Image (cartoon, rainbow, N blue to C red; front, side, top):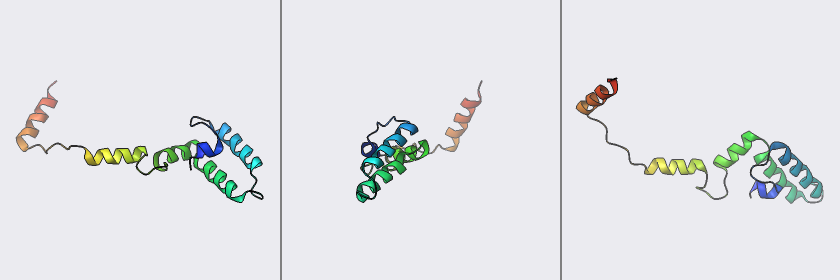
Length: 101
């Protein structure tokens, strides 16, 4: 369930527009007559109601597993080639080169 699609707002919508879309959706599908739809609307609004929750949703709560930026970072970190540790002589050369003005 994509909360932006449920509420009918674009991804770059601000807090006020998201709140208006939520209130309009609740008017159209009130909890007394459409309880299941109201739960979807409330869950969608809860995910993107403010900047903090929107960021959290975009980082961790994507539709398909492995799509979030955090998953991409972890995948990259696991597959990254790590350099071999420097030996004592190589470390001395490195420090000597860094200390020259």
